[in-house]
Length: 161
Image 1 (cartoon, one colour):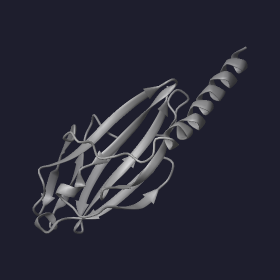
Image 2: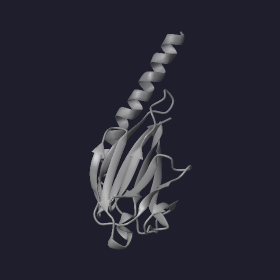
Image 3: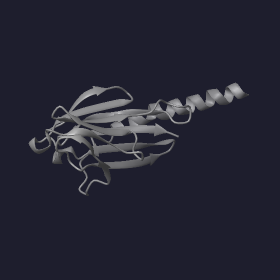
């Protein structure tokens, strides 16, 4: 009986993750919201001239069996066009050249509340990274979209519950 419960749980999780990409594919790429970004990261400066903060648009959409997160950092205020430089099903990493007034910045921006997201400043660039945690039986996750939208990084990821 215990094995049947484990198999049922495993199939339930797998079906949720397999259905998530199909659900998000119909949405198309995310768009830049008209409202101001709703999440702010404080930049910890090590040297150079750095922005005080970096802002992001974050949203979450619930669906049966899980949810979908979308994040778009507002890098246009501090950097040129972003480009995707590394990606896997759990990682998306973008880089963008810093504007001249921040080109000397060396630092980082992280948040305990939004631990999947981080920024690194250095070598005249800002790097934005989305790193999902390892899957657990109760919380598998998967990046379903990663691209540049209006010169900014954009990532959508799904999590089952």
